[in-house]
Amino acid sequence: MLKFQYRYFIFTIIIFLVEVFIALFVHDEIIRPHIGDLLVVILIYCFLKSFLNIAVGKIARFTLLFSYTVETLQYFKIVELLGLGHSKIARIIIGTSFSWMDIVAYTLGIGIVLIIEKFTTRRKELITEKKVEIIETGIE
Image (cartoon, rainbow, N blue to C red):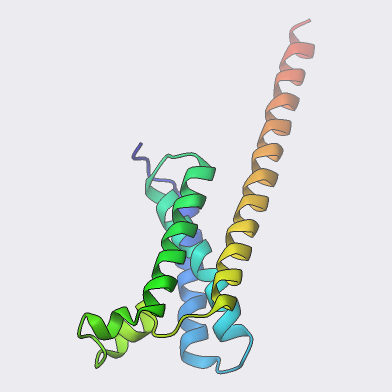
């Protein structure tokens, strides 16, 4: 169940740095609110895959459910209920306002993850099949 996967950890770091850049320097109406939310679910997914050797679908579902839960908690003003309304970091990390567009962005982000995972898995299978074919033809 626990297995460090270097590739996912590198993706985690890169996406985290992109998210920090967006938070600090991008102040628009598309990239910061929507692309940032799309990337955050990919970030969470890659972070979990960095340490957990669990099926793609399970981690993707967990990540999406977690994201939906945080967004729902924003609807109920969880930051205020926890007494963290004065904390800028809490307001940024947890968020303060519910948005259906965030739900859409999270869903699209996990969709991208699933497409990439399917593509890379199929590519690995084709490479493995080709290696087996080369070995079999070399033996005969």
